[in-house]
Image (tube, rainbow, N blue to C red; front, side, top):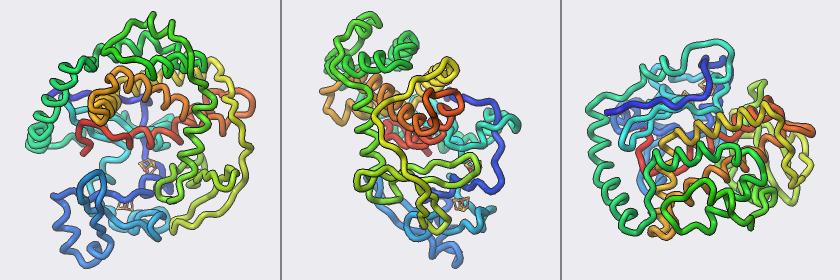
Length: 365
Ligand code: SF4
Ligand code: SF4
């Protein structure tokens, strides 16, 4: 099977005392479950949970939204027995018609100036051929049915074709006016494919700043702390942003899930302008999103959910444009008047874990 790698940065080094990746309920795969359930120290921390339409076994969090139960003072107490998810992180394996390895850019270890080449590390994490064949076998029929149905309904576009279109439109994705055009096009489009010139000529009906602000405040209004995005600060603090009672507040979270208020954030719908270096980084990040098979799998799934009412093209462009707006809104938090490269990088660090959580037609395993 073809293997593809989709990375943005050149180094990876796990940072001592970070443990950002331990702020999740790591899933225990079937092949490791017996080990966990037969060990009297591990078993009490295993939780059976219904998620994404199926039962999964995960490790419990402290107080239901803190760090993993096995984390103590930012060290894993079961390091040699930690489950697959923890051994893979920050790398993610996505299987569709090929296997693709990407990396979660919310991991600060990927933004270091030294370390190992991410591709070298990821190459050592490839699944066995039998496992790939088993999952690919499960996916094959689903892909065939989905794509045939979309072709019949005239809403299908092949991945290379939509990727090429996005590359031609990249500069449009880095300006508010351009994003408004893309979103307006995605909103009204009923066709399977389009020329870049048609998208450039779209009449604008979307206000990017309003869209970004409403979408972001909704994300940060989430009542369950577990579902709020976590930002790993440069000093490795874990930060949570909450919109509550009309106020936007930063909190610092401890291992037990306790929240300490840090400061209020002034609410503004304005998106600060990007300088040239920030624009260049945003284009590179977009190039990565466009390269990720998860992006295309997400658009296919959204079209499928709409019973083929919304073309894959609209979902693909719409998802990328809304991702840029979410990221831009978050980068705003780290900038004074203009978003420079450093502020944009913090926006990516804050946002990328959410991006990789998107549902997709392929398998993440
Ligand atoms: S988030 Fe990255 S740097 Fe931090 S502990 Fe996990 S792998 Fe290491
Ligand atoms: S098992 Fe260990 S490495 Fe995995 S999330 Fe828990 S503390 Fe972190």
